[in-house]
Length: 503
Image (cartoon, rainbow, N blue to C red; front, side):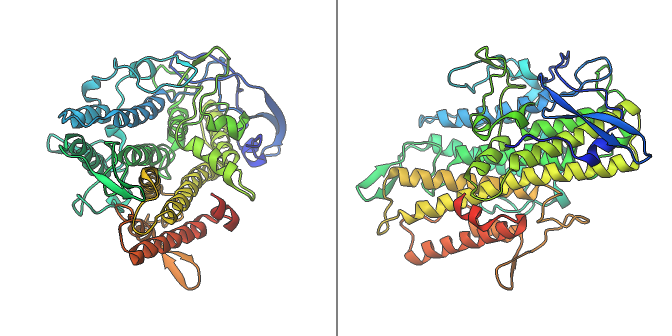
């Protein structure tokens, strides 16, 4: 991570910004104390002014009140973490409540879980919040999943947030017109079946047959704990962030009035919600990659982590991991956070002025594209990372057997992370796999006279990995297919070849 400041174009576009820094809020809004630099800039009309070029995602109005609010997004980040924790706790007991419990965590019907205890924990720290309602009330994952869901026979939720109303990338157990919601339910059904299964399954290792004792790992090599978590991060968080709150059709210019009694405008709140789904702390730009990877950031050194401002969730951590794993010219953390802070600075200035100029609109869209593009590169590079892991796991196969039970578990884990994240690359309208005008999938040129689209990449990955007891031909063909997928991702996102090898 390198310290980031706002670009000259953004500084010029942000004239009239009241200021930034630490503040308190009555809206459960994250805020953080920070220092900022003042940079001179000149507007298109030739007037000289100054604007704060800051390293934190912290903005205030003329009264010094924080205008940043994304507690609902933090609540959903925690819900995803808790679903992962619940899946990890499942035991083979025949307990029929697994599906009901997971669907409750997914749907939060009638806000019933607002008073429920948060399951996630952070070693060495206590949490400032004890329940979901302590973060934000009335929130659910199902209400924000791409494509929506069916309730009482009617379509509900984000029915317009699935690009071209088409979901691709998974075949098993789904109908041709299935939506992301249906895939989540399918995964939950599989977990219920695994928990209720009377007998045990085993895999052949070089030391003989070993029982699969992780209930959430199926004998076909699918780790549903990883698959569910990663897919939810994408189908809810990445979709909402890039295709709703920061989507190309978002009309920020019409949202510059105060959001009810809140100290922020609707435009500011919507931009913040996009940032909240990225999952970074407000002081993200001031942290080292190692500090980001640690996730918890005890800024006030009190031993208590405020989940709304002192914890890095999801993709914000993966950006740092890929920067650390790169051997040549990668600073995804700086790229993504500068896009967010540049864009939010423009929205703050426009909110104070009550209008968004043409120049500001142009700069805002550029900043959003920068943030969304870097966010997606963090995901795509993580898919590359897991492609490398999966092929490495397969290299350990020995004469039709796994090297150990851990070899099997690692393959299942890495494959499920790879597939869960890869499925999510379809959810952003800013993706290189999408036509900017129509949203249609486009083919990416790679190699020599070769091209492939995202649906082909996902098909190469399949709905489960090839296992040690498959034929040598099938194993080699699958490794070759994954290398093709990696080559397509490298071409689509312009990744350095050395980084692709090293991730």
